[in-house]
Image (cartoon, rainbow, N blue to C red):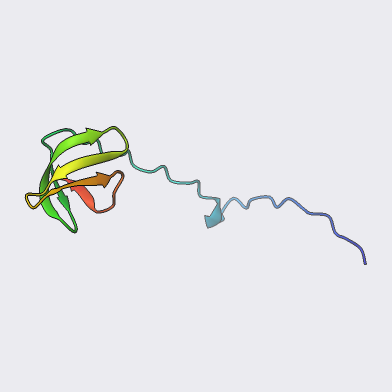
Length: 76
């Protein structure tokens, strides 16, 4: 049996698969006293910030450390 050579496929100009990767939106920056909401804990305010790692949020019932970016934490 003959082995075939691997051929580099050239992209077709009208192909939908030629789309470049979409750049993600910039990360939200939290500062102390920001009002936030969390899907599980509800409304709260930021009491501490660990740069690009986590935020400490007081939700009234307790303080929780939320790692960022989090899909459940939103700035109001």
